[in-house]
Image (cartoon, rainbow, N blue to C red; front, side):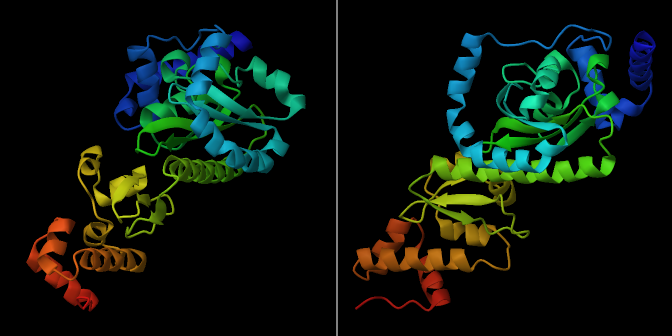
Length: 323
């Protein structure tokens, strides 16, 4: 029965690859990468690869800031899903779990399945799977049972969300995995919401830790995304932005190579509610005028804007020159 099931799974994959599905199905596209790019075979029964202890120690040390930022969210997520036979994994950008939450009674089962710290769940090692495919596609997803590439992984259900660092780059993935046969689609959907929410909380905490002396504010985006955060220094210059904020405001790494006033983002963003940023802009203008002893030309030069632009901004906020 096991051999037939394995062969049947492989046939299903190969049939899908020979159809037009690869052009319109993200799942089949991942299967195609597994076959054509990574040269994997669905029937391969080799155990999940593992890092050596020394390699794992090096990887974990490099991820300490993210691990610190993730602790509370990992605990909350495990409290929500641990009682129904799921484990929680925090993986690095290469698909290696570096932190884990799971019930002691389930440890042996999950270790046998490779759902353990130090294993390698990249797509080029394990084919289509939650962690590896999430990292490649940089989006939240679920790889449920026979959606996995390797036949040996088809009893697993893995729901994963990407985690981006304070510069907007992929930093890792947050995963909830289970090998329960009675895991319903409805419950998987609930897990997906919980995983995505936890990933965004980890990003936000990691962002705050990366800019400990800055003010952290919501970016002025139309949808008021909770994950769209920017960091502002004491001069009201934007010194950092999360991936969501960068996407919403069109910011790139190059944007931060020159001074970027928080007030400029009020004009760049089209959110109807920008009171926080309006206050920040007003404070910038008032501070510049005070430092320039009321000299509009000097204040404009200090702000890097024209005298006419400064006059327009002063009029908009009803700011009078100090006497």
